[in-house]
Length: 134
Image (cartoon, rainbow, N blue to C red):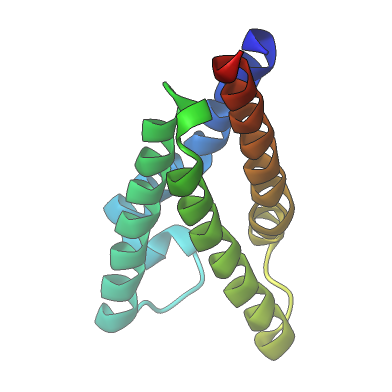
């Protein structure tokens, strides 16, 4: 149990680097980080705002790491936020077209990796609860 818990903590820590680093990049460089041409003030403002949320989302996931087996509700809420973002990204793909490779990889993270991490965290939490009752 302890090894699997530690492994989950490590995987979550590495996964948190994605929203934290991308969030910092988006906050500092704004929509210009996409290198996609003209950036209006409104687009840049919205992009930086969402990047700040993305950064904080990563930091919130980090807060679950130390006692990950007791963070089920928070972990699921944060994960649901990521999945909803992935569904929105999927809608964009259907409505506007395929995004670049980094955004497609983000979609895999949002709709595959995060749900698997949610299930894994639930497994660790259930096992910890059983062990506590013994």
